[in-house]
Image (tube, rainbow, N blue to C red; front, side):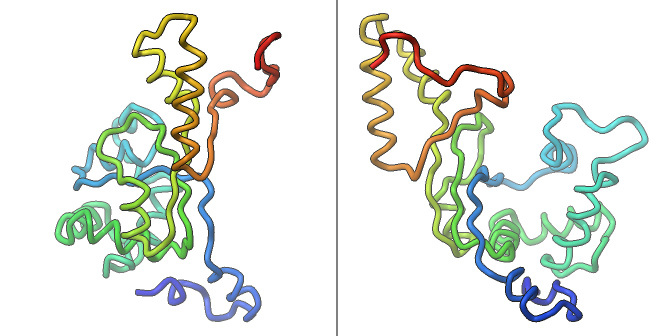
Length: 198
C-alpha cells in the first residue's frame, strides 16, 4: 500500500499535495534493526522502562492505536489488526522488510539522525536512508562526544584540546550538532561559556 492510498480522497487537492510533499525529519533516531518479541516491542512504544500496568497493554495507548491503524495496512493487514496478528506479520516479513516498508511509506526525503542514544541495535543514518529511500545524515549529540572524551581520562590541561579535536572530527562528517541540556535540566540554564573560555 502506498502512502497516498492512506489519505482520505475528500481532501482538497492542495492539502493532499502538501501532505504528500517530501518531509525532512530534522530529529529522529535509528530504528531497531532486529525483530522484537512482544515485551520488547511494547517497551519501544514508550519512553518508560516499565511494562504497562497489569491488565493493560501499550497497544491500548494512542500510539498503539495509531500503529495498528496506520502501520498495519503497510504490512498487508487490515487497519486496527489485533496486536498479536500485527506482531506475527512483522515476524513473518522480517525486521529489514518491515523497516523498509515503514520508513519508505513515511514520505521522508531526508533523515537527520541523532546518533547519541545508547540503545544497541539501532540502524545507522546510512541504513535509515537506504531502507527509507531517502537522504540521511548524522546529528552528533554533544554530551556523547564529551562523555567519550572524558572516559579516555585526559588530564584537565588536555581535556579541552581533546574535546575540540573530537568535535572538529565530528563536524567534518555530520550535518549538525545537538545538546540535551534542556531535556536534562530545563530551559533555565545560562548558555554562555565560562569566563575566559575561548
